Image: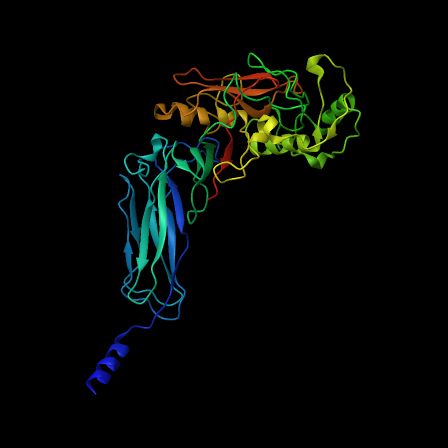
Length: 396
């Protein structure tokens, strides 16, 4: 009888179970103090972000507790979660970032390293335990496969900060041992930083520095006329095959147009070696390892949505629409991976995806990454062998 009585007492004191759910298993924030050039309204970084905890069960959660990690200097968190949470009810945890990035275990990740996430845990006496990993990012931190160089805090505060990263390693070595902007299917003979016999000279529509979403440049009509004079093939494209890109600013759109053309053809365009047009193109695709934008269509660090950055994503320059060091048109790789805190994570001459408006068939923009104010944007023949460093947008 004593054993039965003890068992009955234990059963009656056990609280009815319920289930907690958390809105995000991971969340990324930006540090305070950065100016988000190129984002609508030019906001400041460091927007506070919220995680929601919901009681999805049918009983009240009791003795609810929120455990926060040791945050980087200046970052704080607060919660409106009480000790109980009724069925179908929610409460929030707010993280307010400071000016210091999350640590890599020793130093802030802004030195060019990956952050160690801080873990928030929520549990109750009659619930499961839920958790969310949080990081506070600055320029130079490695996140989602690359070095962060741009942030967008206009994303919903219930999600991670948006932005862009550059791959952590070159996809082609910097000039003079790099790759041509566009390939004619021939390996050619590269020397002295150029491979003029291995390049193709085609004016891809909608990707030069004057191109806008409202008016692509070169126009599709200009492209069609150029194609007809250069090739015996019938033009298989229609205007809808190519986007009208913001040529100086949208490398993802530029890359899509470039790859659309070279996926269709191996051009056999060998004008640089003395042959005369028209040429007969072979059925594509051109090998993506043979030209600059193609290298960014490979899987890099576990991600497959990379692109060749546009000229203003790479840097700034007084002769372009990309602004200046003090007021760039976009958050860019030069400002935030080279100049920022003397990171110098890039050096040398690299291709961008922006074609030149003058003689677009022959040239595209390159950027020379250098510290101490030595950077410059300029245009080069598509047969120059420059470097490639791909970019991708963060997934909030």
